Length: 368
View 1 (cartoon, rainbow, N blue to C red):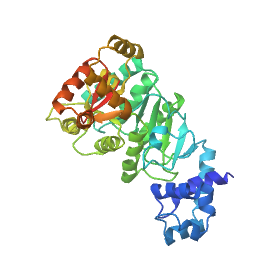
View 2: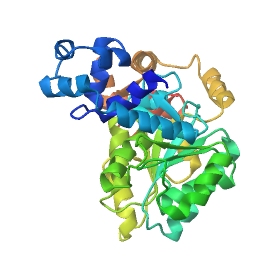
View 3: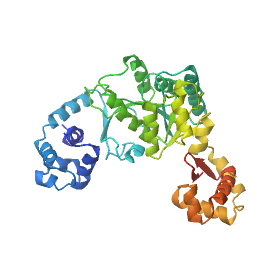
View 4: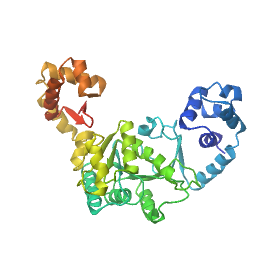
């Protein structure tokens, strides 16, 4: 039996050891094996590891449960992906609270070029459903390599998965429970189709983990962290979709929201995100292409060639700053360029019209 894999499963079961502490233990001691083979005194030299936690590691009581889980994943051909493994999702790895281990059923396609997450209310209206279907169909037509991520729940989640499948896009379902069950059970047939079409079911939860409310809150950070952008299609003023959007913003990922009428209950959350600059307004797939830089490289190069020698000294100064720092707010640009904000705003507008920069939510700018 793979002892190293047992350790990888087991570290997440240790009482008093959260994700941050577990990563700290591995980094400080050098390997997952070293964590379980260290003495109590060695363990207590690790910052924030006290006597109780060190005792729990030394006892190794949890390894029996880890062995049981290993038998389960081997029996059902589930792929465990540890955060130090090469095939762990790169985007998710950059998030401080990324899961220690993911249990994957299906195709490991986490590191493809274009991955977007779509979330929304479980009480989707015809407006939300129709927009989801058209959005994904349009994305599939121009960017068939795109992967769609959602949570396999009722409403916008399942409409997103179904639209992806209908348009031959790979889709990833992030679950809030173990892979020994399916919630809701009526979505088993869609889970099966996801696997048949080279998608995947993903969870950080071991078998026998129930679909409890707190698990779905934890699940949201994977949905936000595994993709380049999160799209919110219909949401009330409170709910999991807004939590996912907030997490995506904290990860410095792009967020989009579908606007709706101010009196519509399930548009209030989206309107709030747009109003408070927490999300870009989404009207069509072209908005995603523009913000994400998905337009044709040929078109971009043509634009750049056309204006290559037309930059003013001040415009070139702004371009140089964005080349150095990737993304900057207008205030930071003005400060570093030693120009008034009003002048910078005018220059940025010219560069945006020329297709050189993009204006992101929060008055953040970056080069195309």
